[in-house]
Image 1 (cartoon, rainbow, N blue to C red):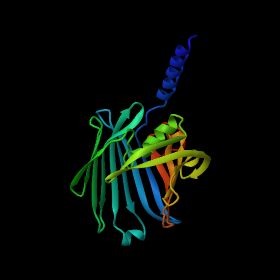
Image 2: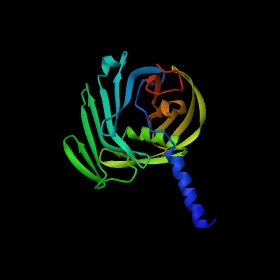
Image 3: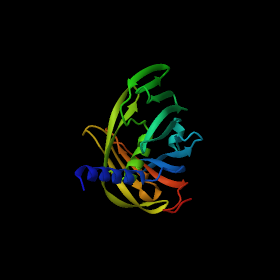
Image 4: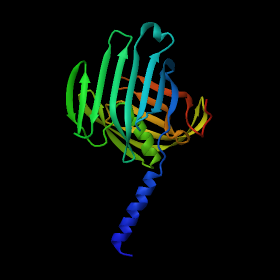
Length: 243
């Protein structure tokens, strides 16, 4: 067999493996948000297929308990995206902060045809060059799920963040069995690799739930520790105990 034919066969085999990963299903998941040992809020996330072949990923957070007496902020994010070459490609992203003293609105439009990110912050519009593989502030977690399903162990994404892009880099650092309100779950542990003075993030992603993060921990630069822990999930066909 000629070397060139061997290369073509290998490339074809690799493409077959890549396309073998199933597409994400629609789902709804709820999490508790904790600061240290204190539960301070709840997070709801949902992924919904749209009629035009796109998907809508939504995230909403509100504070609970005694914290709600002093903090009224409610945060909501929404990302509309589609598949492109087996990867997540965002089209629009919106962010809203309401309820408290400081309100904020943000919108990103991803113009892939012209390679431009159109950014609206506080009524002011900006344009940035759109890098390959760019994600928004929540679609990157779906991209992690997708890349884990494709067997990747290291990945990075340019993340649209106000008036610039930040590169988020991740790597798989092991496996861990996690006790959750859904029961015992086998997870892939993923860590964000970052500069020493930046905040650290670790995600526990469950293969039985299409690599959905079931726990997320974030250590801030000032020493504060925040975590999300899944409480319920619907929409996945099999795996853990579903509600």
